[in-house]
Image (spheres, helix red, strand yellow):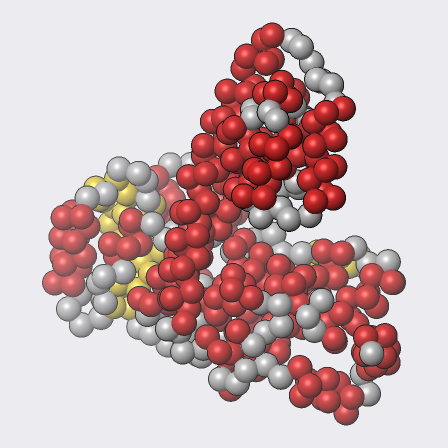
Length: 425
């Protein structure tokens, strides 16, 4: 992608927690200017204002190894600074190839290399896009929620492992989701097998009823487990410590639950205000969580991607081909925004039970022996092209219209789609 912007100066900024190494070269200069910059709001503002005064007529291009964080937030306020995020892996390879094959690494060198990358190879780079505050708010809410959900998943894994070590019967007594409100309330009340065996059957039955377990058959099965089971261990040390660990994990899960619910409400409100909400709500299987993630993946700027292929490559869904002589290898992309790739990958999986053509494609590829995640990436690749067209035209997705297009093109999927429809009927 060729750039047409003329810059008055180029800056490489090697960031650190407390101070940053700066390398500046003017557009017509031949020497680098090295300096240090404190991570302080006043220092950052003074530095940016000094650049504005020194170069009043032109923009300054700034290369740094971040896409978000306090430094990016501070510099983004200044319209005369255009930020170019550099992947740390790219800088490491460039350092190795261009300057320091011996392995030398220091902050002034990295700042100089960032500046050089920007000056010489900026056609490879994309400036950080200017995104409206409402869209950035939604993206930050979604990323924060994903972090909280990952924390919850980690805590559930720890909880399951702890229970298996001294109280495996609890996994049968609380159901498959050990992080559910029922499970947390049960373990807080009966953290050991001996505790639950001392409870009266009527007490347990009332507990399950209060937590929306209405199946009498299931309740009786669980009461039978309580009556007939024996303890895994009577080791005093284990029984003195693991229930404490379980109690601490349960307390964290109970704190996380309302926080995640609050994020869900904020995400729903923010997503409803997005101009393209209807487009991504129409995607089959997207739901309340994935529709907002798809929306921020494309963003409000329709010039951001010249084609669907640019997004497919940037998101890491498009595969990479390597060829040397007669050897040709295809593999997935290693360097891409992980959250973005997860959004499309997860959506592809959710679309299979909701979209007839997606299910037909998925079943066909699985029948050929393809690995599941490889099939989902291929399905996501197809969905990205469909979504790109809907996004460009600002039109909701229409399953019947797409299947009609497949039929006109005599797609081999049509036979499978018709078979699925016949089975459903």
